[in-house]
Image (tube, rainbow, N blue to C red; front, side, top):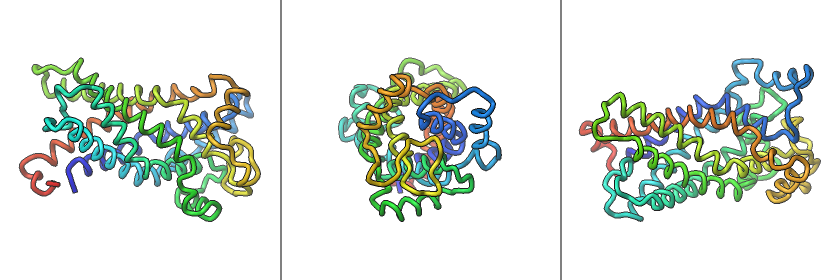
Amino acid sequence: MSADFWAGYISGAIGILIGNPLDLIKVHLQARQSAPRLDTAGALSSARYFDTTGSLVRGSAAPVLGYGALNALLFVAYNRSLKALDPNVVDPTNPDGVALYKIWLAGAAGGLASWTVSSPTEFIKCRAQLSRDRSASSWTVTKEIIDRMGWRGLYFGGVVTSIRDSVGYGFYFWSYELCKRRLMTADDTVNETALKILFCGGVAGIATWASVFPLDVIKTRLQAQPLGGSTLDSQPLLQSTTRRQLAGSWEIARRAYREEGLSAFYRGLGVCSIRAFIVNAVQWAAYEGFMKLFNSPVHAKAYEV
């Protein structure tokens, strides 16, 4: 397989391992129908989700495997799309001179291509993180979804997820390249280049989530609905009793705005931004580092497409 596939896969898995604890907090904040209570009982109720080392990695098995594959598809699709949009591109990791709108379009194409993996991965991760059964694994949740909704159920919430990924990853690559063009100079030392890559990766992560966070809130609430009698359903989830009563994206959005106002669509953005900066700084640095390694004379032949 190509170098960008493996560089994307490894960097994606690293990103999930680093960011899962903060992602767990973000999902809990998004799924709440009101702001977290500040009294003792409310604090104890929230704290029970984070009282063991295992709780910090709850729901990470599916993302580590799935997001590695997602990131691999994302970068492969982005690189191929960018070359299709501009045949003069030699190195997609350094697309100097390429119009930024083409980079956005290539990123959007990459995000759309990664949807086949991101949709089921997000659904499984969301339900594992919110489950009131703290021993529930990603595999338990997957089996529960398939038993109750069939194999197609893994793609529940797929439409809003595909829109989120397409728009978000468009801004992901666009903001990263824009930041690099503003900061990078030919006189940078190796250490300066590494620091700037970390910073630009972090900025790209924040820009991505800021552009699609309301869609992510809708996606989380949509996928967090109880499946009806499931032993894994969590208390903060939107209330429903049977599969026939599962609300759609539009109804979720209307209900959230009517009952909680615009603030509902940005709950958890602060935590998400911190996570996005850290994860994507490391992820971009890892991706570019592995790309250089795999494309070195020693490894290049083994990774030819």
